[in-house]
Image 1 (cartoon, helix red, strand yellow):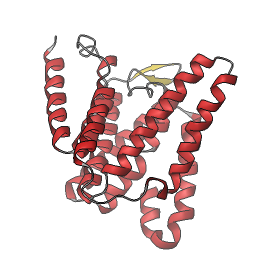
Image 2 (image 1 turned 30 degrees about the vertical axis):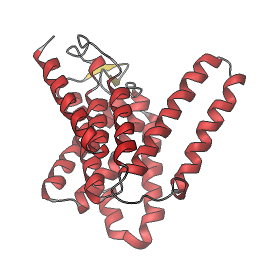
Image 3 (image 1 turned 135 degrees about the horizontal axis):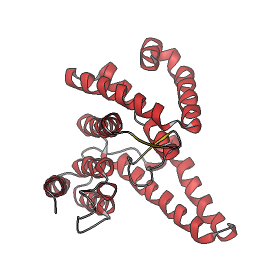
Image 4 (image 1 turned 90 degrees about the vertical axis):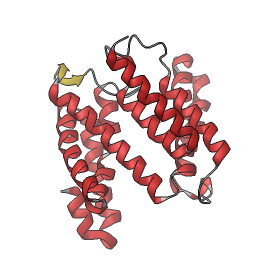
Length: 248
């Protein structure tokens, strides 16, 4: 096993230990695992296990079951997006028996169900400012890691970036869709974060936009335009200045 692999396993072990102390650290360790994604790297292929993300997610769920939340979170269905995500998962499973390939449909329905579990953990655990800041920082830093990899050693096929990404986001379209979730959080950190958070997030956005361009995803670009339009619609009345700065 390489030194890089040993170092990664050491950091992963620290994340697991921190997850036992508080589930918010478990979410941070999950993001670390997701963005480093050992199976697609040369040093990760010699590691004795592959389901690292699933393991830390399970540990985080257990930690939440033990510790609970620091504050009483809102009811799960009090979040407007919950019903849409639950409905999407239900439709995926309901449509599976009628799919052209039920086995493939079942596989993706299960993946959607895993997203729902992760979403549930986020709504239960990220209920304090420090936990939200930790999550945003890890999310932005992880995207920046991808951006640095794309900048230092870009590998393209058919005019699109390949060879980087996380589990289930290792092709141009899915990775571009994932990057769309980072941009608004990075913008928030630039406008409202602490000094070092602003510097890191500003640097991250530069690498993220560079990576987004290399992905050459038409769906991702359409999503970026729609997200910007949505920000104008919902952010203009209360936060006009911040909305324009964020879009810029």
